[in-house]
Length: 257
Image (cartoon, rainbow, N blue to C red):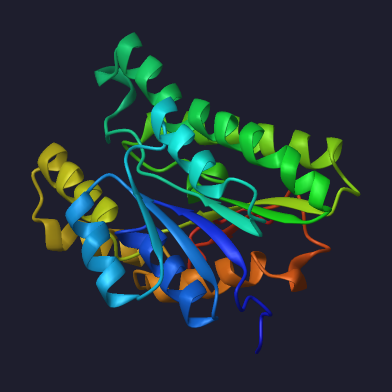
């Protein structure tokens, strides 16, 4: 299927690993131009060598200085879409958290996404077209054990995106959330390790416990997730906005999952 993304410009956060990297690779395969943002310069340089022509920005998107870099690099160019994605807060149960953990989780998960959206949205609306895709978590539909900070803060993003999508309906700009379930990423490996530590069970057993929670009985592939992301970033998704779509192998048990 031709997604009509050739030479269209996209911004991708968290572009050097996990789901962000998979989405970047899918966009490049579709002929898109990509500005990749991530924290590690060496990984970005390696990515640039593999995918000739992508642009890179080193830094943490939650920092104002990095947002300024993004806006300077975009200048007067037309940005077709943005993948608003970055790592989440550390894994921990409720009773281990402190108020400073909650303050930091707000900055890590919520605040910078609002700042980036507010910076990108006006020009997209002026152009009459845009795709904003937020990569959150299956916890927007069903909490994940020992991830209370993520469980709570990602729901704040869900409320923000849904409200904004209603307010700007008819502008040509759509906003949607993709909530990954258990995919083969470093983030999941960290969660397996944390659960192994807390429960005193080998990581392989923890991994099987997680995969057995899904209907398909396996951990997802990042490239499969990226294929849906690319479609949501394409012109074909114009009648979908304000939605939180979980790609989770049947993990969410609720009827509305």
